[in-house]
Length: 424
View 1 (cartoon, helix red, strand yellow):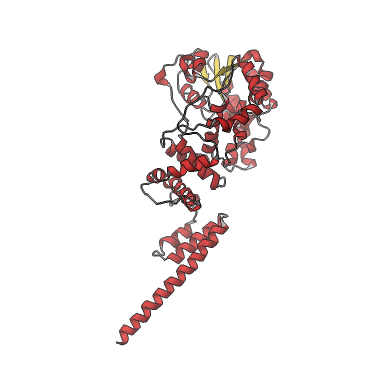
View 2: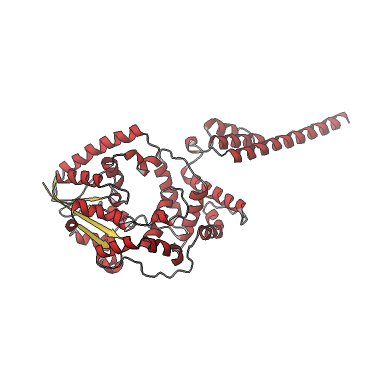
């Protein structure tokens, strides 16, 4: 049997992606990083363990049907057992931060434990615990990056420590669960990746660390917030791929750090005092954040919109154009349009009509219209109506009618002039 299963459970926003991408590539002495589709085992294990895997966010955003998800569940379950049966090292490493999600069930964890103990003598769980404000700031960004449309509602990103970790203690036994404060003075060499490697006795040099899924800047976050907040998009297959490429374009944009104001988070900390006291007791030290000094803090949605507006020209420069915007609803609408163009430019080319507003016939109509404004506007109006934007569609249709009248009037005038000139 395998001597030990090491299970890394996050929590999210504690360097999990860097831990996964580093150790999955590293030849580790005595430890096998289990091969389950990708270094991040969350989606794989949630598909296997969940009673309702079709509700998992990744499957929902990719538009998978119930039948497709059930087939995945069957396939993944077989693959998990095959991987465990063919381990040739004394220890295995599994990393899935969704195992510590607040809405996860004890039954999922018990099922996971049952599978592991069928192949392993013991299970060791390691989790990192991030202070609440730092977590909320980072989790807010992650939800935006993941394509979730939502308001600036901090309740949805509060970490809920008891719901995350108490059930892990219950299932695996507190003596087998190591919870580590995610702060530099608690981590080996002040780094989560080095700390994790140190805890599992794996040699790792700093230059071997792969840094991934770093936080977005305040500027990029504000622009992404405008897009997610004011422009909803329906799920479709390959969404995760396209969205990942879009986010990658924003990774190097801006320089400021997202920091929520003290007043914005104070009520959440007070309302969750019992939860904070529980995790502080579990760790043996206070979980509260140390004060952070920032030149700009976010207290409301309006603050994010103002940052987005202030950076409207910078984002436009990413696609090598500059358009004057007004600081009103029209300016915000133009900003959304610019972001949509940015997303489309490198990801959704016109030669792939399944990813555009227009179908192939409409694209052909536009291409052969010789810039006839009425034809182009009519095609746009129809496409908008099909996509559910009926008010905008009607406005464009009205513009198309006016354009047609102007064109006909101009042509009639030219024809009359030609007839007069011909008679002379």
